[in-house]
Amino acid sequence: MTQKTDPNTEPVRLLFEMTREDNPRLYDDLIRFNKGTKRVNRLRFLAQEGLLAQNWMLVPVGGGISHSPGAARPASISVNPIAAGHMVQAFDVPTLGGED
Image (cartoon, rainbow, N blue to C red):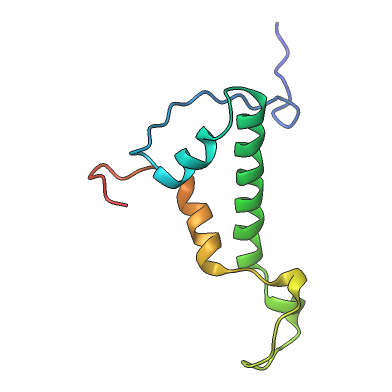
């Protein structure tokens, strides 16, 4: 009887193909790097930043401290929702109609 590997310790392996038509912005960013470690690390970095941006959008600003509408937010919790949306969109499944 074989033992099942704990899914929390099992590495995630990805192999995918991407053309410029799939996502021009992401493609152009990744193509700057030669195949291999540098490109993988860049993708890993972009995924991590996108995940952080997506999670920041779910956290109330200031941990429940109310801010007046005109008050500036501290830089440590400032997230540009448009940039975060683009990051999330970069990892979405492309639409079939080629719409972007």
